[in-house]
Amino acid sequence: MGSFTENYGYDALNRLTSSYGPGLPSKVCQYNAIGNLPFKTVAVT
Image (cartoon, rainbow, N blue to C red):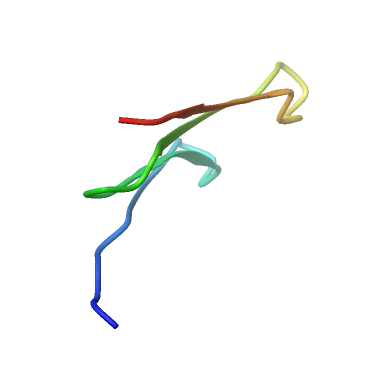
């Protein structure tokens, strides 16, 4: 098994906002005004 690195992004409130890595789909998270996660976008590259 090989290894890979997945990177994560966080906002000022330490909520996950993105993740990406080589050969992995990119994920973007958007929170609404009350802090819920109604949108998560996965982009295959």
